[in-house]
Amino acid sequence: ELHHKKTVFLFGWWIFSTVYYFLLPIGAAYTPGLFKIKIIGAINFGYLFALSQFFVSWALAIYYAHVANKDFDRLTRELVDELK
Image (cartoon, rainbow, N blue to C red):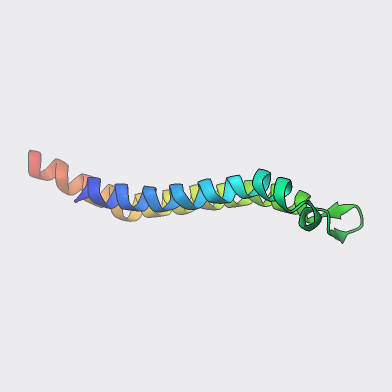
């Protein structure tokens, strides 16, 4: 059960993060006009999207830590208790 839950959880977020990561170079290559749109002063959409990747990575790490502490650690304790 632990392995299945971790695999399903991580695979979904791996797909999301990979697609999100590759949107930057692919989007910049195929839709440069979108990435040149000025948002505030000299800051354009491309800069904001690139910076958002840091925040998304941190948010995913924090969310993983939360889920791991809540679910995966409990399942690991149950597994260890069964093996004793």
